[in-house]
Length: 476
View 1 (cartoon, rainbow, N blue to C red):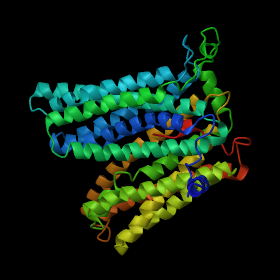
View 2 (tube, rainbow, N blue to C red; view 1 turned 120 degrees about the vertical axis):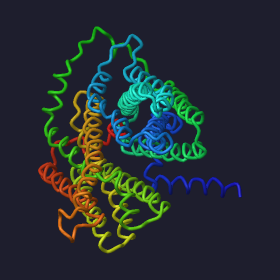
View 3 (tube, helix red, strand yellow; view 1 turned 180 degrees about the horizontal axis):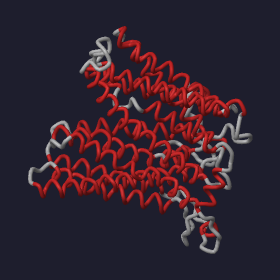
View 4 (cartoon, helix red, strand yellow; view 1 turned 180 degrees about the vertical axis):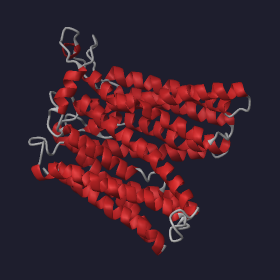
């Protein structure tokens, strides 16, 4: 019996390292306990994302009676800082510090910004829900400041944190480590969403204050644990005596790396193509296919499962030397099939076809994200992973936010026009507005294929770095 137990354990270890895409993420340089601790900063990012885009969104509209247009504006405010991720990444690459840290100061600043924004946010929202004119004005100003602080902190923390992870992890394990960090981000979002929902089930103003400020404290604790003794101090690397390049010079090198503009354009088009439907899938299933609340909520699980599957397959293929552009193109092709399935599910009244399309959207998006991330990181020169990360994050976040807002607006306008008969009797139904958005997404994915096609043919520009999938590149 004593011999059977070790044999069984060894068998499970061999099985896990062979079939589980994240089981072998740990290495001797980055052991599993240290990797688990480092991944906590992704959990803290997930908490902020859920609060901004989910929990507070619903609370402001339903419980506090804030107008939906104002809620949409507040939720969109953090996107103001998305383009600044380029500058944040560049500054963390060349930070000057007598302590010898490059990434830690930025992660700490981002943590404090998030803490400050979440600390004042519930009070600002309660004032915002008041009736007096002075209360409304003060509430809007306070809520705007709170959302801006959280957005600035979120982008700063994630940009510098993922750059730190890239610095620590050995190149051979980066595809698996980044997959592991992404899983932790997803787990943080799912766990916090369930926890916030349970804590706010019996809503009260005091409970709202406790939950949001408790989240602020939790994020700070998680980031402190994540940062503890992760970045080695090296004053020679951050000395003020070292000549630092100007941003324009580094950006010019990045542009001249070959194909960077085309890659970033593909990222923007593909991201918009995959994310324009983010706020429409569940309403589409409920309004058009008459799915229940539980059934539409299950769509999130299908989407996440598809995304993680695409991510795992891409990471494994890249580890075997596959062309990142080809993987991204395959992801776009899968997206075409996915949105076609969603469109045809309405006239066929097929919830099964709709669920298949939803899963394929996640799967294609996972393939596309990993492929383009790998290609973008291949453009980094002289260790400028922060600049590459910041550029990626800026393009991805801006494209996603713009596409989501545009998708909702297009659906509303087109549905209203269709209902009034402007498109003819055949299209005078609720599915028309959704269908137009999905057709636009198909067009964006075709444009993505056109942009990325020449890169697939030439295999440009990652000769030695084809299989690299850097940690710092994954979006948030």
